[in-house]
View 1 (cartoon, helix red, strand yellow):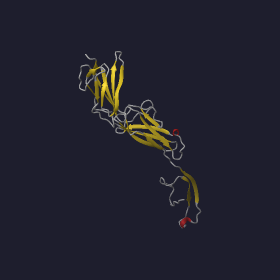
View 2: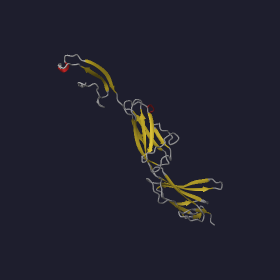
View 3: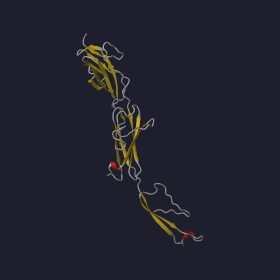
View 4: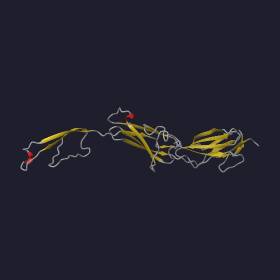
Amino acid sequence: SSDVCSSDLKVLTLPANFLAVAKYEVKCTVRTCGPLDEGCRSVKPEADSVEVTVEANEVPNVKVEAPGKAGPNVRVVLQGAVSLASNAELETDAFILKWSAFATSSGINVDLGLGLGTTTGDDQPNLVVKPERLTPGLDYTFKLTATYPGQNPGESTVKVAISTPPRGGKIVVTPTTGFELETEFTLTAPNWNGDGNLHYTYVAESTGEDGMTTSTILGHGQKKTTLSGIILNKGNLKLNVIVADAFGAEGRTTTPAMPGGAPEIGRASCRERV
């Protein structure tokens, strides 16, 4: 119990967090005293009381897990979890959930609507952002807010960086002309820059008389900047290199085959011996 005494106190105001979570009886006692009645001992007090309940204004506990970095052309998956300390048996669907996101540097919001920017919508525990919805080279702040009836909302934020696709490189093919099923070609992909270890995939494309294009993977591997001993069929080919960084971001370039040509980056022509 606690007493507050004053001769002119008509309103009692207690500071925040003064009372712990519990039920209280607040009693007000009033004495009317004469000028010669020191301490008001001769006057019977009048009193009234009211019951006050102090409840916990609990905030939902929100946790978000996300990759620290992702490629722009892959899905970005964020996983959310929500709980209430006073009721551990609550299911996630007991909470009202809302995801939001914005570019950290500019503050521009990201549309997380179902079918537009995500495959999940913005009101589910997990968020799946579609490929190519986030700009390469930018950082994004994602926030999950959870509200439980009668409680203040809880929230958690996480930042995801979007990598820039590998860049600055090219593909070089030597020799630039050869013989069907005989000449061994060497493909090199120098000067590519990107995040982490780069993975190289070499692809040959040929277009038939019917206009159909066929792609064939010639070889691939991590840090594989050179591919040697490649035998090619007759035809005018496009030789591609696809370079992926550690987060799935891809850069690519192409060298079209042109018989008799010797382009600056090296173009391959595979034809029968003349």
